[in-house]
Image (cartoon, rainbow, N blue to C red; front, side):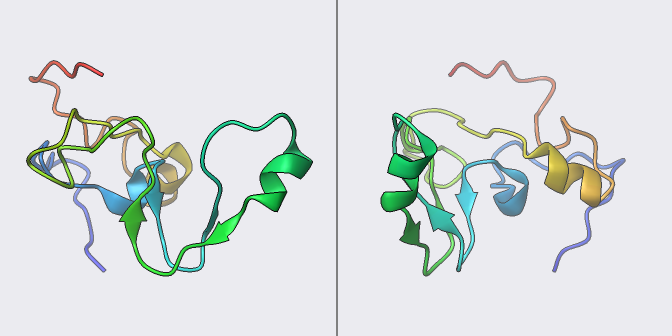
Length: 98
């Protein structure tokens, strides 16, 4: 597993994987869309078999250069756990339009 240096900002085109709220790991459970309540959502859960992007807003340019937009959403608990700032994977010189 890659060890990130908190003082060196990675390229904004890099997919941060586990540090993105939308990234799905094998053996995660996922349900798409909005639900009326927790019980309804639980009936729609699907087991994830391989790493993938679960963003429902469009194709992320960090996964595919032909994507719609940069849909990266920081997963603060994962960033904090590894000692990285919340804005670590956000290029501060580039305006992000979502």
